Amino acid sequence: MTLLKLIACTLLTVLLLVSFSDCADICSWETSSNSKSYSFNLITSVGHNHGLRSEDGFYKISEKEADGSVTIFWFQPCEHMKFNYDAPMCDNCESCGGPLHCGETCSALLSTSTGGFPTCTTLGFASNQSYSLINPDKPEVGVTVRMIAVSTKKSCSLSIAVYCSLKNEELPSVITKDAPGKCDYTTSIHHSAGCPIVTSVKGGGMGWFGTLLIVLLCGLIVYFAVGIAYRMTVLGVSGLEAFPHLDFWKALPHNIQLGFEAVQSFVTTCYRRFTEPTYTRQ
Image (cartoon, rainbow, N blue to C red; front, side, top):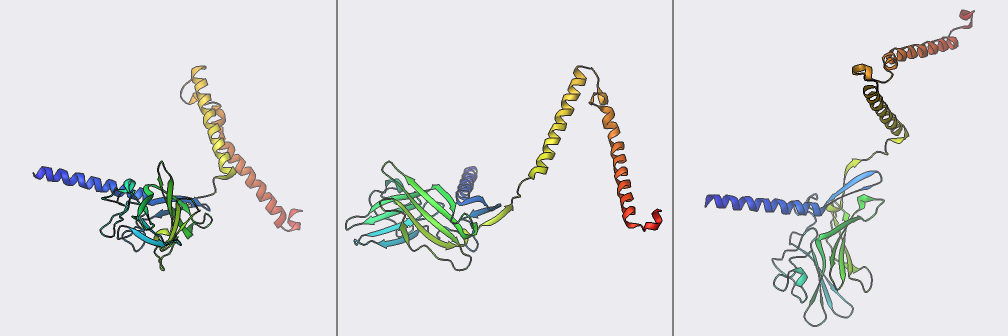
């Protein structure tokens, strides 16, 4: 029995680690803008144990339409929703947990009531979550999280604009429809999870000089490789004698020294000519 308990605990630990790893991958995003790299993480935000995710297991927003109908939105970024209370009760919930567990297998759900029993529409799944910058020119403004649900009947989505806010945080309270006749909705939240971390500063590249050095280095390697191969296979030489133009390379350090001495002598002569008094050069 002890062995079985140990195996069960090990399997449970592995499953929890895998689940956390998947959640971390879904909830993190990195992008580049203005020659800098910005990283967002929605589950390790400052001052929140749950990150952007609601501690209740879901966010809920109710909207009353002009015709008197009531629309209720439930959503939870990064993972599926969890309900210990106030669970959705509506028809057409097969794609999000079914009638007994409605709302528990998706990340965004819409319920519409027009006098009869409410009807549900799945808006998004965490597995279909994507990211974009609210303002590409100013990444520090925040990030937009978009959850998508695609079915044979229609495609729906919920976008959450997460504005960077370390002090004055605001929970989502209003949801708007992106366009008439569409099943795409948008809400916003002010939260520390929308504040990016600058992970690296990218340079502007090597430039023409660096590229030139690489080209010269590659040419030198090819020159030695071809020269050595030719002298060893065709001329039958080996050792140091296999290096092409060996006399030139042996004399190169001495020639460089002579070059430096010539330049030094020229500079010294010019300096003395322009700094010494005229009578000393008669």
